[in-house]
Length: 335
Image 1: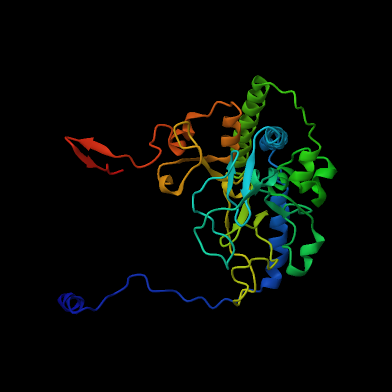
Image 2: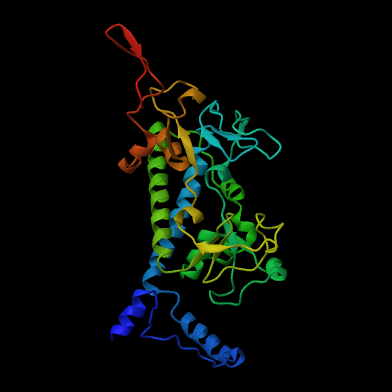
């Protein structure tokens, strides 16, 4: 026993659980029928019945949201940058130098504003429409055999929502075409606009909360390096990712778990407060507030903004650096 203590003192380590080496070979061809049987049995558990009403509510909230935003855009101006995804809700764009532009353009430049549309606020996120939830993985050469529909619609369809067949084809996924069917009423009073704005904002909140609940039950994947979304237990193998197109992956996606922002992007915009200058300037960008585009649009139409967004909008914040005069000495406060 004394000899063992001396050996341990000089660095000899003894393991009470020696590593076991297994030499058993597994024949995957024999396991394949069992794996396919387990997948087939798992598919019988879907759709989850308690989540079917949630899926129907999400589809209804999405329709109300599209109708409401399309109506509000007939009365409120929307500006979009010509060279980047930046948008601004107002008569003219801001002067904040945040334009990322194209690759050949210099970064952090002033935006070049043009008139925006519905797709600029409600960013379309599409995914492959599967025949069933647990079908075989889509190969690269099969990418044209499946329609591309909105990811939220695909998620609700897999969750058991009652959808007509015309909503499950690629031609119905264009929001701009869908907004053209909304009748234009030019005789709406401010109270009517405020009512539509409140309903639209409520639909926006219901849509995001419903999608968040569905994501707790149904698997959805998003690429780590691009915005590609796939609704299903495993991602597809269509090589559409531009990040790794020059490497050995040949455009293959790197799939991770998706969240609600991947399916319903909030589209954060600069928000002008009553005490801000008429045109937001670059010098005050650290003081201005932000808000989701839908919320900013609805608030300008008279909707009541939930208090949870107050921290983002900086309602009581300064509009820019101010000089403070103390005992005849002018100083600048530290923010």
